[in-house]
Length: 539
Figure 1 (cartoon, rainbow, N blue to C red):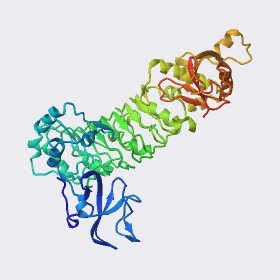
Figure 2 (figure 1 turned 30 degrees about the vertical axis):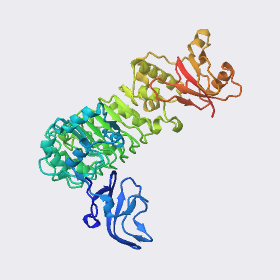
Figure 3 (figure 1 turned 90 degrees about the vertical axis):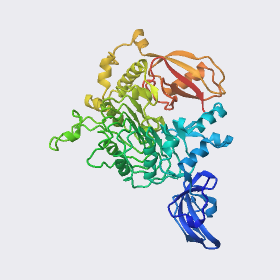
Figure 4 (figure 1 turned 180 degrees about the vertical axis):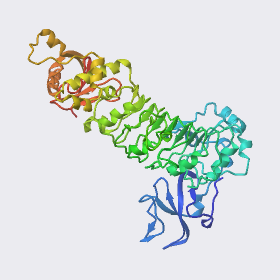
């Protein structure tokens, strides 16, 4: 059903795919002769970046490409301008499928993960799917859909459709999207990812039933999002991953208004670098989840003068801004950014309902870059219940807070105000857990005093060449350095030709913490009582 055309049938900026391969999608950039070759050629800039050149041949530039080798010249008969929605439906669900095609039957989730369609009882399922009126969920991804087809036929063919995946097709016009949605009155979930849609959204009707809209990698900017907002009165989830967004541009004020039902906003894998831009979203009153992983954010802050009032728009300029930003937000994903300061971590405490936080793959939590371990994060984040995807249980919180207090106490050489600034929760946690100040070192340390300074540490061998050894639990002074502990491990496990490498195994942390500073003590590193240290070997 692919639409083959001659070169003269194409136009510049048209979306096309390679004949018989709808996964190879590109944009027409040139139509005409090429010096040294006969006939008319179509110059295509391929989305995948897999071409032959940059639009230039033999010193002559015919068109520009987005990548160094994403362009190529193709004969018109080797390209397809796509098929209609109903043709794609027939192709996907009524034609016999090969094993390879079945492997390609998947739905892209909002986070760009493949969710396979299970073909259980193929004949029975095929019979049911061929009865289009019974379909409630359809995946038409990667089929080269370019148009709606005959007017008002979609509503007759698939009247009960609720979920539709149109990922990576050739759709460019919002009026076609609107036509599809208008005909599908029950449609609630729509995925348009990897379609290069036009900037003009004015022809889009009100999509009152759409609850989830996925526009990942569509090249959309925030001005278009503001226009879209008028057509999405009921949207609850909006996914905008991979759109190279750098700024938020509200339509009528300093803050984004509307989106009254929006609970989830996914802005992962974009180009935001300033938290000031994110604050423009802080008046979205129903927003519960904000996904910002894989951006370029370097810091976070809470506006000090904005506490006490829910709506900044209700306060006069003379009073200044006074509102509770992100008042419904309970999940904030900030993984894989560039956050490196403790002040940013501490500022998260001021966001009223924030309980689920992701900070993994930031310099602040990378030990190799001077980052802090999990127990310090838990202690500094008073309300966090899920950290980096792992639940913070009451026992882990208590142990983390006690470890943190003792860790700070071991460093106490600062004035009270400096401690308050560098460790805002120190005094609170010290009082909460009833931890007393260390007595003067001039006091004679008797056996009981010595015992109180000992930590129970379990040492567990994991090195391949060390062999299987039973774990050993030892009482060690909290002042034991990493270097001294390595020597003790060599003695305990009788390691002769092996140089040990130590890791602290922390509850809830996906990876153990490397203990590589031989001068640091167990207290310095926040190693608490009943901790487990893994004994590996140097590579």
